[in-house]
Length: 231
Ligand SMILES: [Zn+2]
Image (cartoon, rainbow, N blue to C red; front, top):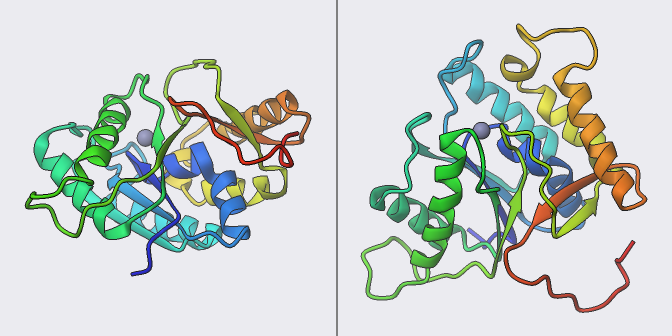
């Protein structure tokens, strides 16, 4: 397979859409090759099942028009940044060869999200190792960009906010595919979960003088080749 430009790594199917759905649509519209690798199947949940969640994931994938989507097959609720998981993910990175990784922000109430963040950092380093028994050939993704789909009501200072105004409807449509997570059994009086998500995108848009935005954090400095895209 031709290498991906961007790979969004998600603890559960729906986290990529929640944290970076608008950005995924924006990157794809610009001609980039964008993939999502879900680390677990996200089940059990109160209104889902592995079959339902897989169907919802497939529908969301089609809405976004992803270049590639896969599932690493690690265990939901028991995700650990151990050596077995690290080797599995590092092997996948060597096969998919993305230039940039998206990972969940490291501080969270959900232990799977905390573990996923640490696991991705470690697997990125392992992916470049020579003289290893990992699948594929050495590859080092240049950057890790952290997205926010957290179970804590944090207000973290992002490194940058991306203007996703033109792609917010695609993000909302992709999220709505996960009926078992966001619609079934949920209160219907406003603000619903979907209302909340839209309002937050509006807030981040406001911070940059745009309609809708998605915030991201990079641990290292953000390098730019020019200032043309500054808002
Ligand atoms: Zn999650």
